[in-house]
Length: 293
Image (cartoon, rainbow, N blue to C red; front, side, top):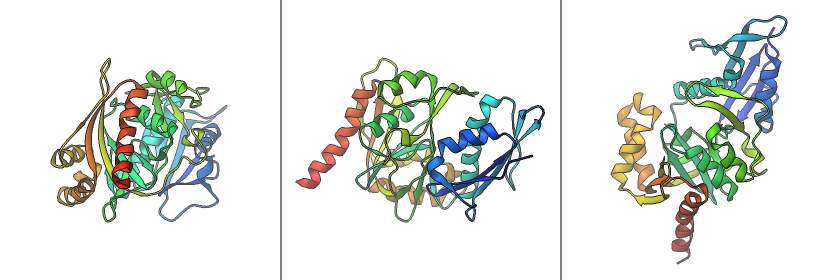
């Protein structure tokens, strides 16, 4: 029997989660303890996770269910939480089309937002953690939701999914990374989740207009570099990272244009985390200097 659903408001995204696997509910609730609410919000994404073999305790295969969506099966317990996060994102893509949806990290500093779109392996998650350590505020990782009317990135402070290759980097930054439970993603291997509040208590930012669009690309053994690009190139590259473009291409491009028009746009080669963060920080410092002048 499934436990009573637990309800969460994760920034602008509401989730209700039920499961017959109590340990899974505990794990998810620990990542989003600050987001708990007493009842379901209207329009919440409702997900139930069931195990087909319940005795002597729930074990796989596990089925993820959401009303109006196809079921999704996960074979192993260690893969359930990563697939749950993916399943929620899939529901956002399908249901929250009022936003421009980018495959991107998003941060905010003193009311100004930066989005960092990129393919898997581009280094954006590790860079996001590094910038949070330097005082930036967190809006989202992997999924930036932008209001097309205001060009403001909305907060959706989901847990950061850290790949095994970045474990040592994150810990060297002084960020506690819980590795008591080992999770597995089929395409990424072993991963761990990082609650952004473990960086600092006030880490979650507010909705903010986009002032920087930075396309990171991790290159082994490379020296980190930052290169300006044209706004037309930025729109083209953003479109390739935009989920909503498949729903309405014309509307999406019309939304991306003003977002880019108000932003500085760059390509970033990432490698050493400290040197890369220094480059990104230089953008913020330069903007402050221009405004002061």
